[in-house]
Image (cartoon, rainbow, N blue to C red):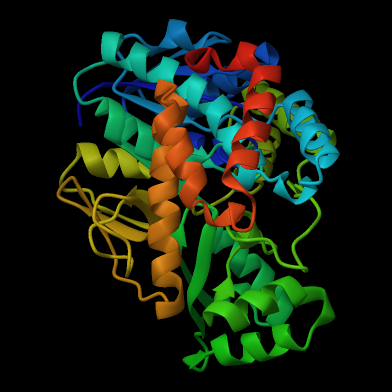
Length: 439
């Protein structure tokens, strides 16, 4: 494979950095120039130096750079991996205060509703600038991969659709939906994780369990899981959607309500659980420093690297995907890939972004067929159309697309359109410095 330039935006991303480093310098040993970009300059430098130690230890030919300026790194790149968080707490608080004041507190969401739309518009401004930089300065055919932790407001599906559809940049999105779901249901059903096969599919932030099998017996555990959730007071929200759609919500906890109409069981506002605190990042920095000083082949360096590589998501591997796209002989199987629908997800029109299992063969991406319950097909089609309109609005400032999206958004069912438009306009006006395409 040819020498490549790869940019990692969000180099210190807790969930994604371990797999990226492992695949680049240990598993595949890709000859490359790597730019580590992070708002925390110390984290960017530590990650770059630890990566350099891995490359030396495992004999990988690579050059390393770090910066806080993405624009500085993009020039001449073959691929950009974005795994940064975009959740601005001040903006989130502003959204909550305004929506709560007018009695729409349940619209404070991360992906759906008016709160999710505001988050889409803020992220869209960043993505539009990145797209313009890539068009001006990247190599022809440069790839973009968006890694969505589900906690940082990435809007992976909408942004991948925006970059592909409106800028022509080949973009894919990754999430850990099946991994998160497997972790949760292994504990919930008391089945060893290594014995549980889980497949999830649907849309970004709107996935459902399509396969749940105890591999020791070959038994489908979907009927048992549905029964236990219906009887479990802690799973009332999930049980509600099992009754509505005949499908088990995927994820660590039920977030599908964000993209659907309010019900009495919907939370008053979205609560974000990331499971990663300041202590985790301090331990990560300490292990990066130990790896840098001692190298991966010494006892201390090896122990540090072991803690790093097992602390993130293991199924989300953007470098493995890039390698398969660049090397037709490589191939890859991906548990959760956000991609244009090619018929793999039932009920969704071709070309709209879906998420589910996929394979990459001969440099081409193919979704693996999954069958969602018929009750979900119309809902998914409506959400994907709404998401495309919001994505267009976010990167272009198109108010007509914004209004059309508001009109069909399932999350706004029961809310007067003129009222929703008025509230949204006031929210945007309050944050207009972050939304220059609209002002």
